[in-house]
Length: 434
Image (cartoon, rainbow, N blue to C red; front, side, top):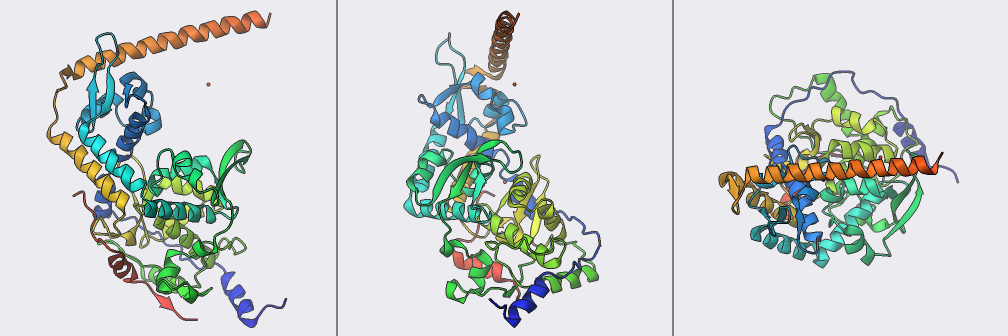
């Protein structure tokens, strides 16, 4: 089939050489967004421990068992100190003198959890979560991702901690779990795949805005620019500013299209990379995630180092915060002075957890429930030693057996409607006609 004159012209434009100015783009601190990230310090860990406790039949677990989760939850302190720090969320007790100390949720935390479950089980939120997860898989040309990559985004997508059984099993027409070779490690791994492509979901947030939510108005190759927001003190050199203006006017290629045929060093390829990053962050309930999550996903999507370069080249679109012992990528347009413009129900619940956590700082005690902090320290220490002795003894036994046989981030978001969101995000957005 012959290509139209428009297609030939567009193809030539899309494969143009790179014109990005080789100027150093300075990183400038954004105190508002740093505060938005810092607000959620320890929140993910608190919710992770909460889910562990709720999953237990007795709704409590030995302190020694929870202490083993420290490396998995990336704690900056011991589990004991963590629970002591957030005594308004966790309650420490000893079932009997002969048993080790246990941890359970406080009555206030249990109450919040029940409210959170009502939200998670509501049909509108379940449908919304399913669609966002499907769109994440659609960003991959293969319509699937390794489960360990999906798990990295579980918290940011607002998935239940047991999402495979509690959510995905109710949508067999959407998802399937299969086993295959990992393209990066060449090892067998489990994948979450989309059963079939969903045309109605293959529309990006930027395309929705320009089409005014009428998908019949979505046009391929339309010139759509991204909202830009630079912090005070940011000095963009004129030659870079001119490049950004021209780059914004390039055709917009949907993140749900495969554009890997483009020259990877060209400006158009970089705009498509930014488009994919923008859509990814928009799918997340807090419009932010750890940078490592973004980079690992980029490897599986086939972008390699291009995600990292896009974050450096476009500080008006993305912000990388260095707070809370990690790097967090934030979609700038989603925030206004450090507050989320779009109010997601789950974020509302998370800010209530933050409020409860903050109360512990004001009511810090040396003793919780009659058990002193030093007592708990000694208990954990002795329990750890016992575990280590058992492990050492077991390894000796195995060694003997082998030898005999043979001769391893204020706590409220602002803006309560989608109309507020559109007003904020349309600000600065450029739409240029062909």
